[in-house]
Image (cartoon, rainbow, N blue to C red; front, side):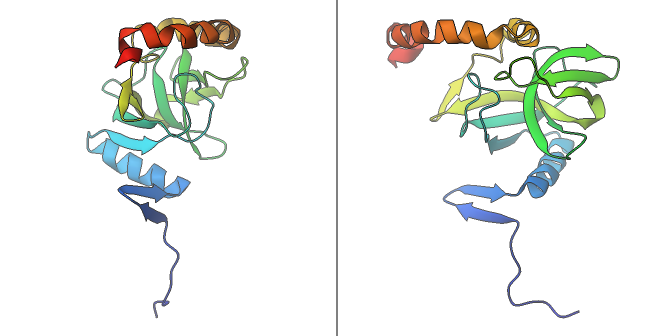
Length: 174
């Protein structure tokens, strides 16, 4: 078989980043996680706002136990479209998890088989700095508020106050 002079690449290199298509990204993530290593990539979209924003760099680590806990942010393959998604586990039912984005009004991804979950988000970076809110013990409360449809209305009330107080907090002053 003769090789073509030009074959389209599944990726593009920008600076120190490698930009992959959905299928190539998923395949690479599966391979890296299967070797027990964390996988870092740039998040796209706003479905996890305010905790993960478009352009944040997230690290996904392999699941140490068979299934994630309520409140964990996970990377999974959406069963109907085979697309990669990063959302929060809001409930568990047998060998499946009820998953939804933090920026949704109670409409989740439905029950996702644990076999479709690739790993758990263990780090979020924004502007080169670690973002801890949403991955610590507060993740349980976030999951319950999200499942009940209270997270977005609560965040809309709190976020203007947070923006005013942030410059005076220790983290905001650095």
